[in-house]
Image 1 (cartoon, rainbow, N blue to C red):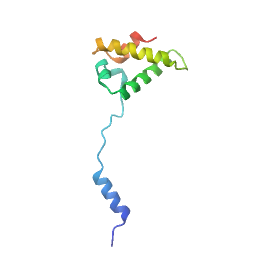
Image 2 (cartoon, one colour):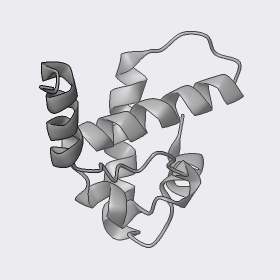
Image 3 (cartoon, one colour):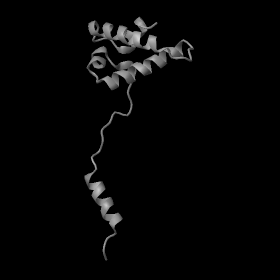
Image 4 (cartoon, rainbow, N blue to C red):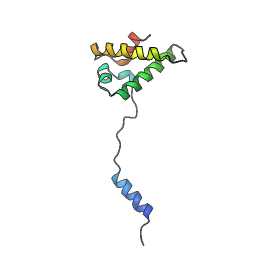
Length: 97
């Protein structure tokens, strides 16, 4: 009996699959300024966007003003450059408007 093409393809696929070790859960309250500054631009934008939503929700705001998001991102970045051991959450609580 010849094995079906599907069975062979499945075995080959399973044999060559690399297990991804992606980080599934990120506790944003633990990210330090140093870690933020060392992150790539996409991760920095993701963290900044999440924090913007977090603080907007804490103030019962349902709109996003991108001028403030950009301004706060710059302020937090400057703060983090001189406070690398501080958490990003703490930096944002001290500097967010």
